[in-house]
Amino acid sequence: MSDKIQKTSKFTPKQLGIMYIMGAAFFFALMNLFVQTSGDIPVMQKSFFRNIVALAIAIAVIIKDGEKVKFVKGSGKYLFMRSFFGTLGILFNFYAISHLDSISDASILNKLAPFFAIIFSIFLIHEKPDKKEVLCVIVAFCGALFVIRPSFNNFNFMPALIGAISGMFAGFAYTNVRKLGLLGEKSANIVLVFSAFSCITMIPYLIYNYTPMNSVEFWSLMGAGVSAAGGQFCITNAYKSSPAKEISVFDYTQVLFAALLGFIFLGQIPDRLSYVGYAIIIAASVYRWHLGNRS
Image 1 (cartoon, rainbow, N blue to C red):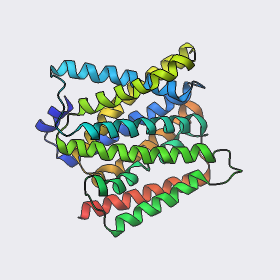
Image 2 (image 1 turned 135 degrees about the vertical axis):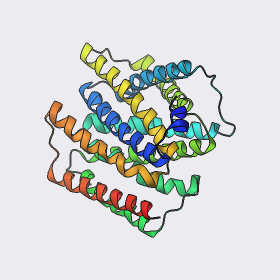
Image 3 (image 1 turned 60 degrees about the vertical axis):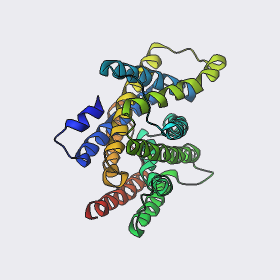
Image 4 (image 1 turned 120 degrees about the vertical axis):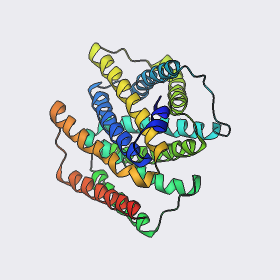
């Protein structure tokens, strides 16, 4: 369905990419809120329920479009890498969300993904950055240190580091989404394979370690799943529509959405060092986006 919209829309590919990525930012911020309100449920169980809902929605979209599931020739290995590293990214991100004091901290660390995507794009799709873009990547990673704050005395150090690693995995996954878009693979197929892969890999764990849930935990995970599905379709279409360097800056609206939702529903207020890190990372992203627009 979203592929048809791209073919008939009056918007340019870049404008579509911006709208999709901002939609993804809101949905993923909402997902983070639901993940944290789901309590102490194991991360792998949270991931399963997040993805089973996304899988059901992907199947519904394919049925509604009345199209058979046909994959583009040569897309198999990229679908696998998108699914494998995307699943790792979710697990690491959910751990960070569940253990950090602020969902906006988890969001900004996961939003290192576009910077990692620039690096991985060099090798996977031969989109080479210039020296200024490389400088932006370095500055962004320096900004992340204000959030991670490497110290054995920092209670949040390990969850924050894991949150940053989730951004690395997500960046590699998104680079494969971009490659799949260049090959012409359908968005619903990408979401379908990713969601199915994530669910199947979680089943062995759930068989032996399933944790009973109360109604609040269950509906929180259902909300996380619906939000994730919306975000997944949006992010898939965003990176299919435009190169990462043109649209990724708008992905940082997730931090604003997450901070707002965290404050309203959880009473969370990030500390000053976190705000410094947010500012550095977002500034680096804005400058890199400006460079992309000039080229």
